[in-house]
Image 1: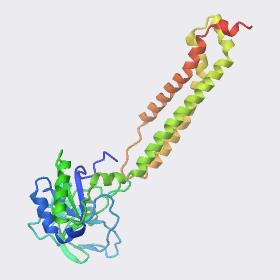
Image 2 (image 1 turned 180 degrees about the vertical axis):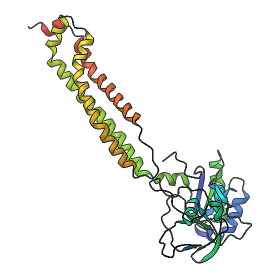
Image 3 (image 1 turned 90 degrees about the vertical axis):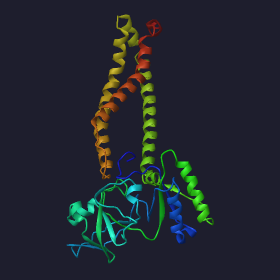
Length: 340
């Protein structure tokens, strides 16, 4: 989820919600942003493309089924939206301030497919949203505007002529300087309201807080499980070695090697561990598969993960049990047999 290509570049995107006097001074605010070299790469949107929840059924296109109840999410975006978010147009053009795009629309590939057009065929086709008739001027490559648990849905982009929030693409290594420039612009145009901002990538990370917490819990309980298991193995191996101390002494007197005695003490544990691995791997695979099935975009489970886990389990068990086994095997048999 952290590394998946969302269809846009989320890095260095600073958003500033419109508050206070900005609503009545949008033109001045835009001019100030455009005239500063650190903030000139900006756009206006009504909401972040992170978790769009609302949608509409009130849109029309040629050949639409009048009984269709398809709900399509939408965003109001300004010019430079495609460029600021580094998205890809597969056909047509983005919105432009040099043209009257107030009644034009951009759709994504998913919606173009539902309508029944190839991306190139959709350009220039009539389209209406809430009775506002226009045409499709572009088709944007599909991008994630909801969490990775959900598949990409159809999307309508309409021209933003009312406001919402500014999104500025900061230059690499210039984030602090960009924030300083934005703070000064806000102080000049909107002095009654404190400067506040956020980062698009942080908003996206918030979508996966539950997965972060679950991951941390897995780490914690896995570590506790391994630690408690090692304590149990160590105690059991110490008990078994003590219980068989005279047998070990007799075997050493009769010529058994240290390796042979260590094998004698550890083979029973290896059998139990092999049984545990045989039971746990199918259960772990089933549980992980069911969990991953809740995600529209997911990894495939590689069996090498289970092989590595089994190898590590055997190594940890052998180290834990082996310590007491070697200790017992190298002990002087005189100490264990002197009372016999």
